Image 1 (cartoon, helix red, strand yellow):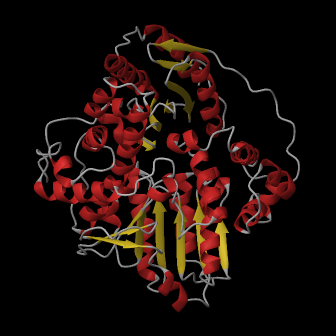
Image 2 (tube, one colour):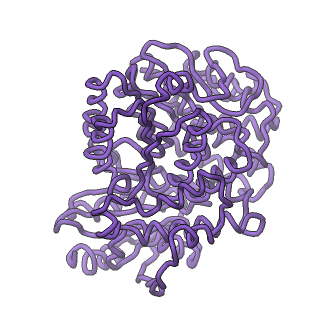
Image 3 (cartoon, rainbow, N blue to C red):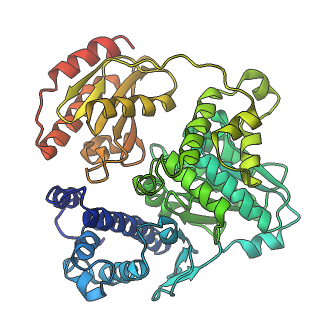
Amino acid sequence: MNEYPARTDLDFYRELKRLDPKSPEVIAALAFARTWADLARRVLAIRHAQAGADVEYPPALPLPALKTYLETGAEFTPNQFFKHVADWPAEERHLLADLAVWLAYAYDAANPIASSYQVWSGVPGDKHIRLVGPRRVQPLLPYLQLAEPPLASWLAANRDRPVAVIAHYDVHGLSMLALTLRWLARQGQTDVEAILSFELTGDISKLWKRTVPKAITSERGYSTIVMIDCSVHSRTPERTLKALQKLADRPDCRLVLVDHHDDTAKLAPEMLSGQLDLVLTDVLSCGLVAEPGRVERDLMVLGALGDKVAEVSRLYTVDSHAHLHQANTAYHQRMIHFSPTPRAMKQSGVQPLEPLWQALAGGAAIDPYLAREQLGPLPAGETPHVPDYLACGSILFVTERPPAVGRTWYATLEGLMAQTGLAYAAAVRILDGSRANMLLLTHWQSVHLPPIRYFVPAKFLARCLGHMAAVWIDVHSSEALELLKAVTDGLNAFLGTPADFSPVADALEQNVLCAG
């Protein structure tokens, strides 16, 4: 175990509290620090996994990059970086300083795709770290920079066998699926089966319990199974590990897991095998891609808008790229419409969105009209219901039972946050009579504020799914108010906005917890 300094991840956000979040210099430094820290986490995860060690990160990881960039811009040297990490273990200090200097070289804050890299795993014991992405000067060892995913030779040797691509059921997964299908087509793959639907890839439990094992054991005999934007099952990781164990019975099958969720990175040491390529990536490159052209870049941006990447949204605005924003909204509406899949389609094995992703993979222009052209008109929807809510310091709570489809909660909470100016929100419902299922959300543009997951007590972290800023948690209904109060009190204490949680607790108890 590494001896990291006695600080916490919140120290990074304490530093940001002293700065002007609207300053161009701070915006640029924060974008670089977040980009570097995201890549550094993935590098450390692969390095530790290949060494058979638990995954650990230095606390307040983005802090040294932020400070160095504010002092020197992108032109810094390892020594300038070192003074901010003097208390890190020596090996990590050199590994991550070299990464920071390499990434800063030719860094362009106006072109995030140019700094988007995947980290590919090797076999256990491998000391190299493979970075796949845009060509630039080669980094120092142990880094190896590759312009193409290291999968081409395997695919070429198995070209007469089918490939399966399993993608998460959201706009990001849809975009990355189309991106991956384009890359596979360039490799000469003609027999590719894509899997993306509410039932098959929209529920993480069903994904690992049914969809993945079924693909591995399929009579079609896939040479390669590519999983796109599919996180591990962090609440019950044994489901993921059990599914992957089935690869042992299919020695001629290779599984490529491409994902950007930290839960996947943390499980890396337990997953690595000779049949699994673990690809830890950012949101932009969460698919198979190399030297992206215009179509690929648009798909990458569409996916990032779908997953609400603030740095991408700041550059690709509604005014400058209206077609991408409108397409994101239109495609998301279709996914809600097909949640669940209509009975007739499900019984006949039809995946409702297939015409759309095939059109996108074929290079069709990304715009809202493509959904109508490929899927037909969307039935008129009802006016969205605005739920009752209460603010408690810096966080608001929906105080009535939210809609049944969890995917609609994001838009509801974001609308309320925009209305109130608050950066945090929460909603909860009761499932199965006693299970409190809740979403804790940080506004996606509030990157200068700590993600809400930082305030979840340690005893509940094993019950979390999702991103740091958008957390789904399942607890027993008797524990719901304890959890929500702890999050609220911790968050408000950090931001200096203390508030009484009692009115929220009373409203939730009466309208949701007891009425569930």
